Each structure stands twice: as C-alpha cells, then as structure tokens.
Length: 192
Length: 195
Image 1: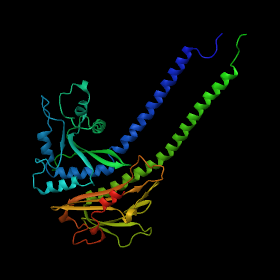
Image 2 (image 1 turned 30 degrees about the vertical axis):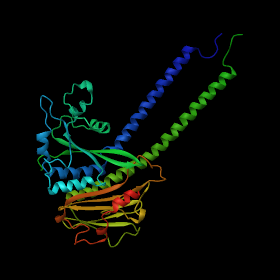
Image 3 (image 1 turned 180 degrees about the vertical axis):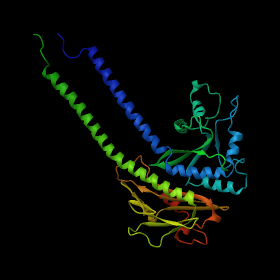
C-alpha cells in the first residue's frame, strides 16, 4: 500500500523548487547589479569633475600625447590603456605652472581621484583582453587595473567609434566603507 | 483496507507547508510594494539632483564664473543664498533651503532627507585653492538621510565645481571680493572630517 511521497516524487519536487528559486535569484541579482551600476557609474557629480580634469589635460596637449603613446601596432607592443598623472613630464613639464596646479588639485581630499586612464573611445578590444580565450596579445593593457574598473570599462560602448576617452576612478567613504565611482567622457578632438 | 484520500497528518503537513509559502510570498510582495514606493521617491530626487547640477554647471561652463558671494538678503526660509556672477556680468541667485533648491527662479524640492547646512555651524562646505594663477573651487551641500527610508544606496549630495584662471575671476579671497567666503577656504576639510 502506497503512503506519502516516494523518493522519485520527492526528488522531482525538490528539483522543480530549486530551479524556480534559481530563476528568481537570477532575476533579482540582475536588478541589484543594474542598481549598483546606476549609482556608481557616471554620476553627474563625478562627470563634471571629470570634465574639469579633462579640460586641464587638454590644455596640455593630451591628444598629441595619446597619438604618440596610445597606438596599436601588429606586434601588440603598445598598450590600449594609459594611466596618467600630474607627474607625467610629457604632459606637465616639471616646474611648470600647470603641473604645480595639477599636483595641488590631485593632492587634496576634495577631488577623490584614485586613477586617471585614457583609452580609445571604442573599448571593445581592450575589454576583450579580460577574456583569456579571446586571443588578446596586447599584454599589460589591463595589468594593475582593478576588477571594479574592468567592470566599468566593460559597460562602456563606443563600438566602431574613433577617438579617445578619459576614464577616472574616484573613491569616497560611505558609511565607513571605501566605495569606487567611475566616470568617463569622450576627448574632443581638435580643440586643444 | 484500501487508503482513500489524505490522512489528517498529511492534511496538516500540507496546510503547514502552504502557510509557510504564503507567509514568504506575502512578505516578498510587501517588500516589493515598499520598494516601488521608495523607487518613485528616489527617482524623483535623483532626477532633480541631476538637473540642478547640470543647470548650474552648464552655466559655469558656458557663461564662465566671474564672482561668487553671499546675498545680502537671504530668502525667507533663513537658509543660504549665493549670488553667482558670470563673465558677461549677468548674475543668478542660488538658494539652498532645508528641503529645496532654487536657481534662477526654478525650484526643485527634495522628497526625502534634508540639506545639511547647519552641521557644526558651517552653512556649507566651501573650498578655494589658488596656485600660480589657477584656481579651483568646490561647493558641497550634503543631504542628511539619517532616519529616512533611503538611508543607504543613494547619493543626493550636491556639488558645484569650477576651475579657471584667477585673472579672469573675482572669487572670494581676491581684493575685489572680501566677503565672508574669503575666510572659508578650509571648511571642507573640517566639515568632512567631522562628518
């Protein structure tokens, strides 16, 4: 005489329940990820900071610098991403007024700048470097770049677009926890 | 005897299991409903913040900041009034109230939280640094969300930022603008450290 569930029925029910829970978790998780992106990516406060920092770099011929240093060749010896700072002598000659101001600007707590990068507007080749099976040969482009920054770079579009973009990583303490914010702007060409 | 239907124990177990599921689903629906309400408030505040920052900053960029000073006649709410003069010598007033911002006669109301203007007796956080003919200036207005439903995971602080050449401006600290702001160059440090 049959009483209650048999083993097979129990396993089927558990499988159906587990699958349903996984589906629910996945949909909620994607909502949380999108919410995270909305808050930490391209906030207007950080976009305008980025605008002024880009303005400072542009007034020091950053496009010419990028054309010389951020270039591809067949051997893949050149990086697709450049980290720059006020201490870069090609951009800010030592003892120059702009360098002194840039150092002062970055040294303060107010800007919260962690790192400044320049890359191509089209980041598809760069983000392909994160995938080991992509066959990317351009070594060191993403070495030293944090996982958070790579996530942000991966969210940028610009497929097929020419030109460069600035990407800045900012940090800020929120509820005693260090949070990273990102903002990116396209570098206008021909306005130096 | 052949079993017909469910036994009492099976019925009780089934009802108990259904009860657990119903409670779980009910809680989930209540959370989702509350999240929907919060989301509306949050969206409105975030959109307003974006509009304020964009409107003022676009004026800074397009018209060029010449001078910044406190108004002689603060608004009736008793909070902050700033007089912003542009390079074409036109000027606009920025009012920061506890729950709203008015700029150029346009008003944006904060739905949750309040502008934290009086913490540690500082009306706001102002920073001004000059070096070799360049300056940068930050005005920060924090939003206090303590005790509000959006206490976490939302950024509503306002920041107005500008850099430029000192010879083209008459900012606080210059001989042409010796107002109250001239002595406020380190407020941000104190403000943030105490925050």
